[in-house]
Amino acid sequence: MWVVVGLGNPGRRYSKTRHNVGFMVVDEIAGRNEIELREKESYLFGRGSVGDTEVVLAEPLTFMNRSGLAVRAVMSKYSVQPENLIVVHDDIDMETGKLKIRERGSSGGHKGIESVIESTGTRDFIRVKIGIGREEGVAAEDYVLGKFRKDEVPMIKEAVVRAADAIAAILKEGAGKAMNKFN
Image (cartoon, rainbow, N blue to C red):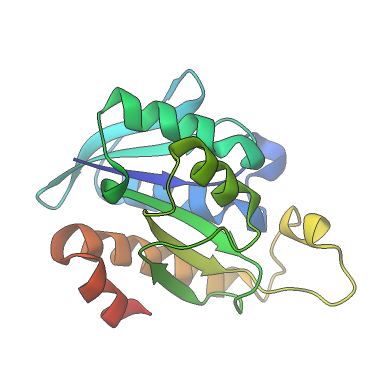
């Protein structure tokens, strides 16, 4: 079994913001695979299959900088080890719409990933990162909580679809092959 977690902030106020692309990808996977997400304590979750692989999809209902608490709770509930964890998140240091898969690493300053590392005690989990770009003269905190510009929406929609495809490839073929195909 695998756990796929999309990072974001809960609530309608944040639903279409740059910081919530992780939620968008989990929603895309849930829709494609007819997995219903329902609320449980500190996260939304759904259990089903992507291809032949059993998965739990999750979206933390904690705010971004406390995402690790929900991730740890899901992993504990389903007895999933970090090597079977995929976390999907935004990356302000990548150009808008760009996709990158990493098998491990630091947080790169991302508060949600910092929380996951702290709560799980490891950096060894797969990340699927979606670039959201950066805007000169705008504080990072304000930028990530802003909505996508009209010209960015098609790029993000395409990136969400590609990220869902990449996760399906990771589950079927492994992270190495998926990285060769999608990075």
